[in-house]
Image 1 (spheres, rainbow, N blue to C red):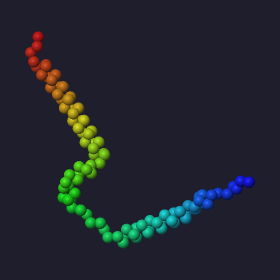
Image 2 (image 1 turned 180 degrees about the vertical axis):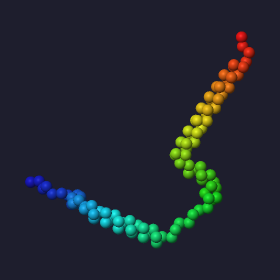
Image 3 (image 1 turned 30 degrees about the vertical axis):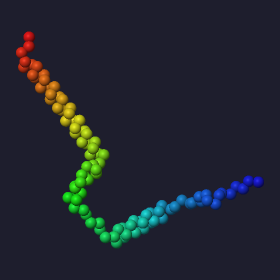
Image 4 (image 1 turned 180 degrees about the horizontal axis):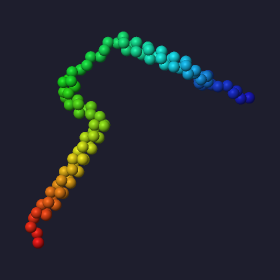
Length: 98
């Protein structure tokens, strides 16, 4: 005969939590979180000069800034190429050819 019992380590089925009770729990959590933050001493800020020393800024450049830098570089290259092309055309028009 098979025993149709759940294993002792299986999860127990939990009834749904009332929405009002869930809001109350969340509010309590946020209140305690704010109170705990108020008890801690505020973190001291580092001087900006200490942060800039040693190339630390380069290590902290984010992905978005890298993408922006690449986009600006590619835009500059395209503009320079087009200007160079126009200058070549003008030089060709000005040169005496038969």
